[in-house]
Image (cartoon, rainbow over all chains, first blue to last red; front, side):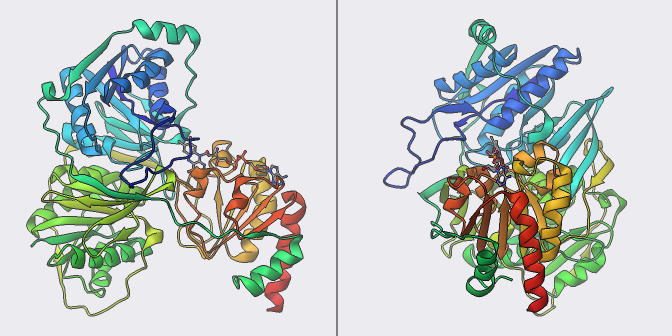
Length: 249
Length: 325
Ligand SMILES: Cc1cc2nc3c(=O)[nH]c(=O)nc-3n(C[C@H](O)[C@H](O)[C@H](O)COP(=O)(O)OP(=O)(O)OC[C@H]3O[C@@H](n4cnc5c(N)ncnc54)[C@H](O)[C@@H]3O)c2cc1C
């Protein structure tokens, strides 16, 4: 079985995001790009399955401009076997990403897709579910545990009330939550090896996909600032402030 | 001019706040997008009673099914049921609250009807544009959706629960829907439960971070404070990852978003990913021994101290204040 793992490049989660002067986007100069943390968790899970002998190959896939290849190479440095970059310079929304991933899935003989539950830039939490529906596959989202069976997989999901375990048939789409695993670091030899691993570049048009982005950002603004508060000296002052000033007790 | 499907959570015949929030937002969208009717959907055991309740909020139609296929929530089954209502009731838009149910199946439903979805919105403008946070809340984006079918999921803290109005709508039972085998089965739950208020509904939230050091310290140090305040308990990712607190207590960008009257952050540094889930709280208190912790940049009241000394003291002081007041 081959496992397909989408990897998206996002600004480093430690970077302070600034908005450009006309509010049309974020300032990208000087930003460090990383692989979306949830996608790293997805790569790790796929590698674990391969290392157990339940998968033969892990393929990372991305969609975007040529430099999105950097994050695919990172996935390969972690241990993925090869990569597919769907090249496209325009705006990519969840829907377009999902259609590209689904098309790549259909070209190879994959048995599973493992992907992040959300990307930490647009925070939409949609792409995995969209891919599953486009391909008519079962979905098991927000996974904190994955147990592979014969023709099926048991997935423990992080839900609002706690944990829920579902059993779905394979092939399927699994999206990862934070507790699924702790992703390994790419080692130096891993990084060297990754440079020689095969990477296919496929222009979006060759997949027969018409980009049709239906969500447009009209304006970005910073969030409203909270007025600065103050430090209190002790518990007595805190309780008095909560009672008499804030009136929340 | 089409109709709006409103997905309504229901628990054994009762509409929770998340459903009433969806009704409020659907009403706003109806105006902003010039839509015709609001079409509710309730699924699972108790859906019939929940549909009766939903009608008291002025929905035009509420479709329900208590079919065994919906007894346990499953993404594919719920998406198929909603698709059937969506088509038969001439909908071209849909709304759900962005809890783990709405997040899970709404995109799937959107793909079925070729809709575009805006996730986790916090505002609806009168011209039909929407507002949503991005980049862990560092950016507030005004967005526009185009195309024939538009979906939104809602951030619950940004909308008020609907109030009952007139009940003149129609209740309709959903006929049988083909659910493909890919829907799978739910084979187990491990619910955190407890008697404390629901994190996302609570008036007061007390959250613990990595500095809590153990599950036991949550129990011994934080729970008494929470109980003195009638508060829900939350946690940072670090506390959840370390196993001090269950997953569904995680507050933040990738956990739950809360906006209580009072949020007390105990031993939490204030990473942007945590702030994304609580900075709209009315009053924020931080207890942290590091005077430079970033949490103090957004806290209304900061107490620089060792939590193990001051939290028990605070618990007693609150008990005393409450019994005096
Ligand atoms: C993809 C991604 C998603 C994430 N999502 C979330 C999310 O949803 N929610 C979230 O919370 N985080 C999230 N994070 C993690 C976030 O970046 C921080 O790592 C996390 O919030 C830190 O938790 P903390 O404040 O408890 O721990 P720390 O940052 O370690 O802070 C502990 C604090 O406790 C203080 N302290 C220590 N001992 C004491 C004492 N005795 N008394 C008083 N104070 C003490 C210290 O001064 C310190 O400030 C995410 C990260 C990533 C990469």
